[in-house]
Amino acid sequence: MRRYQIEIPTQATLQSDFVIGVLSGVLTLASLSLAIFGFVYSIFAQIMSQVGIQRPPDIAYNLKEVAKWTLTLTCFSSLIALMCIIWVYLKNDMLLVFISGSLIMLLIITCGVVFYIIKELMKLQ
Image (tube, rainbow, N blue to C red; front, side, top):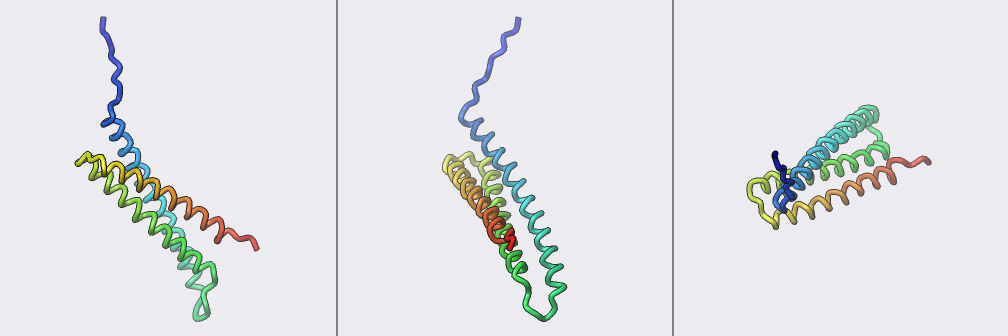
């Protein structure tokens, strides 16, 4: 008769699971923001090809702002992904705290991007 023991996860395994989850999430976010950037750039290029010499429409400036936000998101996500990879090799508690704080900042920036898109680009006037 075999006895199976239930292993209680230790703090180290929970931290590793957290970091791997964060790594997966930020890589997904970086890919998504690059896809959004590609879409925004293609629309911007279509608008600018029709403009000619006159002043570009306001939507072109709004698209440029969205492109800046997506660039910020991509860079910040890549930085967090790099820290996660470094943490896998170093296992430093301060780096884990910094990763957690950076993740909170990333979520705030993401909410800012969504708010900007809703407020500035979805005007129905």
